[in-house]
Image (tube, rainbow, N blue to C red; front, side):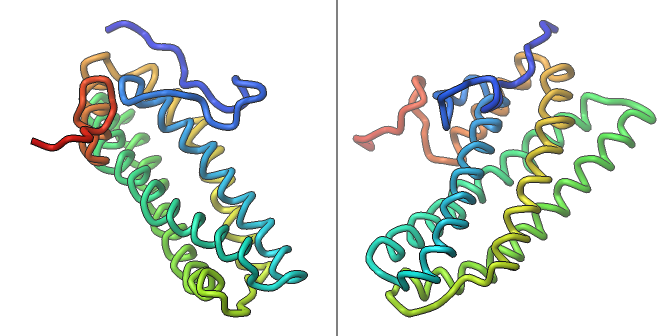
Length: 199
């Protein structure tokens, strides 16, 4: 097995908010997704402040709709990428007591996914009102807690999960994970581009 370098993180790419990576490098793609989550969290934080001063104007409505679109699709895919592909591959790659440690880590991260999803559902109800032009607010504590949990979760994945996967998973397994990620998003073209002209 050829050792791969650790996945790129946003800190490795100064001046870039989201590295251009594809399904052929799935760990890097997962790290890039973390950057997009952080960008959406920053938008959510700014939106809460904007609503307090400006109300649900057109800018707030558009921002709320964009945040909902992201967390309703891309974030769901990201959790599935990890839970359906990456976590099982890591567990399969380990034996004995090492496998127990990996199982504990992945179970803990999956539990965090459930908590993030629960908190998202509560925020989403308010964002729907904002997107519809209602004068809803986003409670600072709910926004802060959601963002803080995501920040801690991402930090754990980037410090523990992704480097471990980069060390332990062989190229064939990473290719399989990348193909599964591509399929989950309906992007079946070899170059990673969705097929615009279905047969």
